[in-house]
Image (cartoon, rainbow, N blue to C red):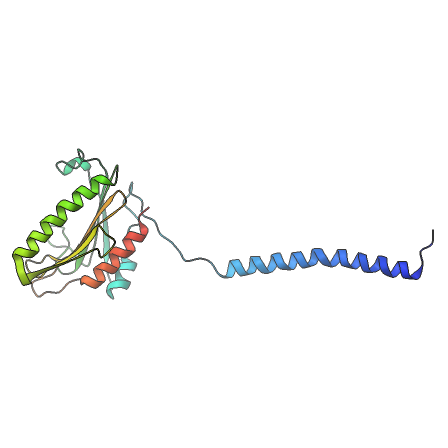
Amino acid sequence: MISSPQEDVGIQKNSCSWRIIPMIFFLIASLWTSCTSETPGPETFSGVFESCEGFTDTGMVEDLTETSGLIQRVRILEIDSIPGLAESGAVNNCLVEVFRTLDGNNEPVQGSSLSLSLVRFETREQPLLLYNSALASALITTEQMGDLANIQQEVLGPDSYLMNVKTGGIGAIIVYVSDAVFVSMSSTTDSRGNTLADEGQLLDVAQNVQSRLP
């Protein structure tokens, strides 16, 4: 059967349409792939309790404290090394220290270091008991020391406090509970009152650590 010229035109139009449609889908897919590859999401970090790595790093601390030349030391502490910790249901115990120099006893020099302690428990109730005990002691100490100490509660959620002690080289301390993890951080001061991280900077570091908790 011989088709008419009009039918030939119609067949050609339909043929072109079916060729164009796959090309359109291919272009859309290519553009989507290009857009997603050019706009990656923000890099995220997560700490690992088994190795005690990833909860903080020198680069982050240097950025938040506007300093440089820091060193980090990570230690996995035995649960049994602290009396009563194993009996209370502790699973992991991590100590992370960020400092400039060490003293003769291989300990970070006061005024140029901060420490981070993380203890993970089996349930959330256990770190809350420890937190409430620490808070009670902090409130009593603040009251006894008067103007030499102050405390702010709920700085990182309902179960948290920031304490600043202006004597004895103690400096700023942050304590909080995140799920089943008890976290405490401190930044000591030297005899002249110098510190690696003041209250605001230590709070910034603590917030970053909180975001890295698995």
